[in-house]
Image (cartoon, rainbow over all chains, first blue to last red; front, top):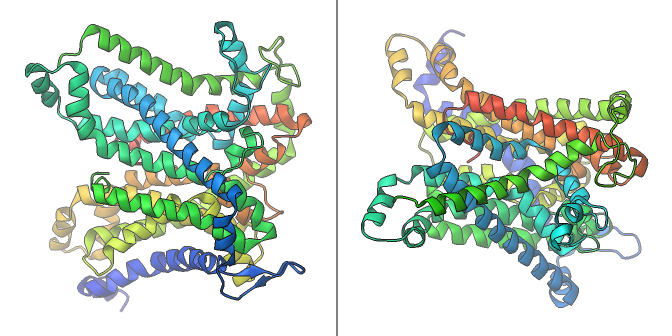
Amino acid sequence: MLHSLPNFFHKNQRLRLIALLTTPVLWLVVAYLGALAMLLVTAFFTIDSFTGNVIQQFNLGNFHDMLTDAAYKNVVLRTLGIAISVTFICSVLAIPMAFYMAKIARPRSQKILVALVLTPLWASYLVKIYAWRTMLEPGNGVLDWLLGPIGINSPGFGGPAIIIGLSYLWLPYMILPIYAGLERLPNNLLDASGDLGAHNFYTFRKVILPLIFPSLVAGSMFTFSLSLGDYITAQIIGGKLQMLGNVVYQNFSINLPFAATIAMVPVSIMALYLYLVRRTGALASM
Amino acid sequence: MTISRNARLLLASLLGVGLAFIYIPLSVVIINSFNASKTFSWPPSHFTTIWWSKALENTGVREALKWSIFAGLSATAIALVLGTCLAFAVSRYQFFGREVISLLVVLPISLPGVVTGIALNSAFTKQLGMSTGLLTVVIGHATFCIVIVYNNAIARLRRMGTSLQEASMDLGANGITTFRLITLPNLASALFAGGLLAFGLSFDEIVVTTFTAGPGIQTLPIWIYNNLFRPNQAPIVNVVAATLVVLSVIPIYLSQRLSQDSTTGGRF
């Protein structure tokens, strides 16, 4: 009986598929989608201001509060601004680095450079932000000591610090897809462009950039979405500045429905972003 | 395109600037773990190894390390099983909703951690009446680790094709024997790389952990976070941070040796 079991499964494609799918799909749907759906529903509830209990009565009050209060609009705009700046800084830093790694470096040093870029991904997130706390410390920080002599001072803790910190955290996520994209790009395309008389920069703008655009988009998915939801960086090096994540975090224990409402903002922005990315077709080449 | 000497030099120096940007803060962490000053004023005037010996004796760190390793191993084990099953289903079968699965599996790491965190917390504590603890941490971590294993496994399964399996079956091996002798050995290094990445992700995770751990459990990132702003713990935090920076070389070395699918270790 037991011996025939493997063959029984082999002959029943459908059964094998069900056996493979059931547990993981149940896990993801119950443990994750279910929780997410409940959170979405909670966003439409309110809390009793005396007892702090959640009142399960459907209303749009939280959304109304969020959309009419200028403070929340500022947080949304600030968070978006930070996420866009981080994505921009990461792209500007990553393109030349990835280009050198993929097209100029010799195979041996190429391997070492990839390892050098990958290593910080394994260093702890907190350690990296903590490192920037030491770097940015106004007065006796490393940045003041390093750049003070040439007249540049640390921006201290606040918005610029958050942008620097997040760019630092997510830079490898931008370099690696661009590097992979450039590596796939045949060298003879660049040769052809050069032979036809295009300068380096013209070739970059007209040949390289359009071809690595999907990789840029792939990288931006990390830099943009990871920045959008972050709150720990803001807590450690952001001074008093708040991002969307901080508002969610603060409301979580005192007003869960409102925290859920705010949490829908980064989720909707990401959904819109993913939809736009899908339309560019960049996802298919990831 | 022949790249002019000047352009080469420019690109090389930009690469240098980028690498300096990446490595200066990490070096500062390592140097500061030897800084004799308790306030870590920069540049350090004296060096000492006393913080290292104090950190070794610190029971909080050891306890946190234990929780982190345990949670990481459990989450990785679950993710390995579930991620591999999904990868087999998606790469070897045609079925309704196949596209939805590849979306469902990336969702937990695409959405902000704070959203996943509060969703899981309220589902566990309010809907299911569970108390937060090690179990909830493992469930949370496993959920976002599945995609890492899935990505690694599916890339390998697609590259492998089905001809070897078919040959094995034609020669009379049943499904289990084929899996044991053909499929699994071919898949093993991809699963190892995926498992390594999943463990690394779990080991470093702080946001979802904050919401699922509850007061009883401190993983290493939670311990660091709780002690970050305590002046008398700062030297120990520095040592732990420096250790984590140095240890990050090991998985890089391992994944570069093992993963032939891509030089980036299957993250992309």
